[in-house]
Amino acid sequence: MKNIKMKIARIECDLSQEQLAEAVGVTRQTIGLIEAGKYNLSLNLCIAICKELHKTLDELFWM
Image (cartoon, rainbow, N blue to C red; front, side, top):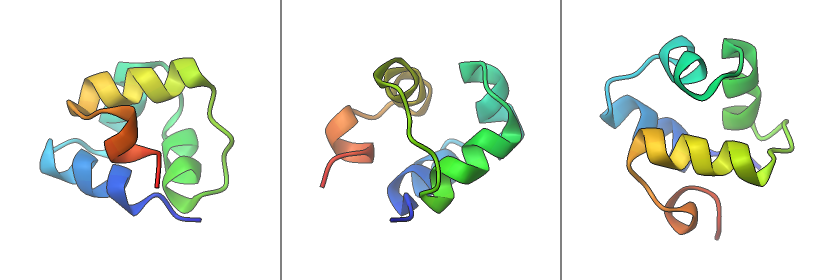
């Protein structure tokens, strides 16, 4: 399932996939795969993305 919420939050923070990737320590391709719903994230990566995008786990990753 695509992660539209994360993509929207990233755009609202005016970050490119590359900028977000650099901030959380992964590649741009990883961010693209997460947004496409084709990557199984670790909890640590979920938390790092949430902190960078100023969102909670519930807001970005849970239904």
